[in-house]
Length: 237
Image (cartoon, rainbow, N blue to C red; front, top):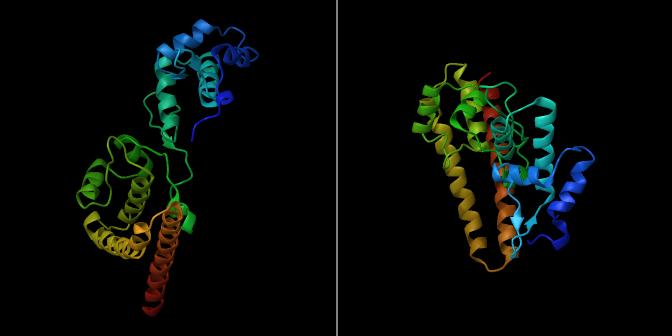
């Protein structure tokens, strides 16, 4: 969906919105920060900059970090990258940023399965956030429990890695967890069998219905799994 024309601000309008909080800011300063890659405003066909509210917020963050924390542009850029990937920037130099999005380890209501997390973690960030060692992560990846997508791991990878780390505390190794992956794959296959006919239908309503059915079935399958495990444990007493 296109952004309405007046959703954009000119560089002069941006300057006007920033001047109250940052009296020393200038158009040259804004252009410099753009040249350094801290903001990336769009351009009109004639070459004029078009700033969004996101660009304005990033400028406020940069200017405040320079004024209040005396951070160099290199660190500010790293912090912005962390924020873009759903992380809280590292507090001290050399430390690892931590996830801030609330899409990891949430409940398993149907809506949960339709959420698309923006979280993107480097290997070091995944290790830090999950508690796995590098060797454990390599083993987990070897069994297909966690998969890197491009350069980063997503929220699903973090949720799996955290669960594996917690189970490892009880002496359960990654190779023991292949049965969980096999069971999950079978459940996914069953869901796909149900929604495939819906996806073959034409129209956006059919696609929306397929997604609704997929999320509902996924939620039910997780509840069923939990109920069966609980029932099994009760029988063993």
